[in-house]
Length: 324
Ligand code: T6T
Image (cartoon, rainbow, N blue to C red; front, top):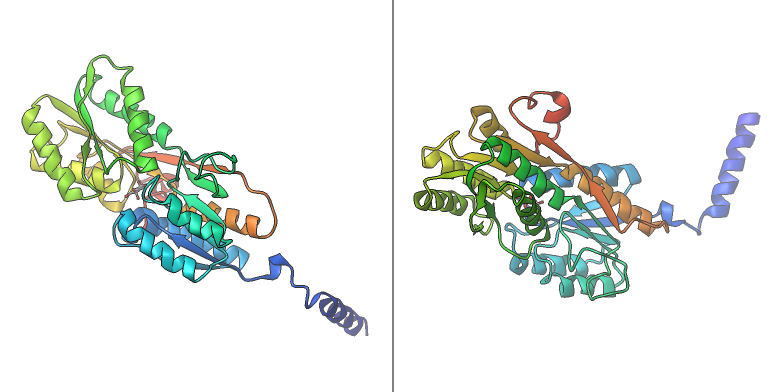
């Protein structure tokens, strides 16, 4: 009898609330637009985003372009906006060129959260400027990451010689900040000269050729900082092709499997692993919080794990190697 009474009372309360489905009961669709689809960094981010979506009963849609370029990202974004998801998470491929395309989403009532990269200055919800409309920015501290890279490279080269930054192109918040942090820190080492940055358009082959060209002009080149996954893979390949394995030191941003192999062989000295799964997870959680009426921090910082030969087989470290 008691069981029946309890069941009846649950049914009664369900009947009372039905027709008034709360925001929490709604199955939200959250879109994630990565910088590009075929990058281990964003593949890992997607996993974290999917884990969070599962936890809150949301549907995650992952839709992106095959290369890191606003020209290909904007049409993907337009297609996503046309489907009107409940929220859009996006890694904008340019600080300025994605402002107007994302404004269209905000104007259509779709909350925007930027993950990994930012638009404008990255200071959101300030009421100032034309790019403060995103709800939140979830990312690594890229300036700090650049400074960590500089300190590691300085140590590896005995604080002397010539180095340069292998970078993607100007206008990308992440890689701009890494270069800035790197150069600021390197200024503390009088024995190190920082040569001109080489821009590779996210093409590892171009980064490898550039390494060889810089080395041909500077036989006293002692180190290179690869400011993202493809820059680092390319710079390391360039060092190998120039026959300078272990002589020209490489510090890599990002930690795909191939970079970890290069740590083992000694071609790369150190890799700064971002936590892309954490970025995806907290991106979705921030969207869910916003959609259910909760306030969200305008900036959410995620961590790094520094990987080198000595710690790469430690499971606590190895879990941050990116998924392919
Ligand atoms: O380094 C990441 C990301 O943080 C950056 O914005 C673009 O490049 C990567 O995706 C690595 O390829």
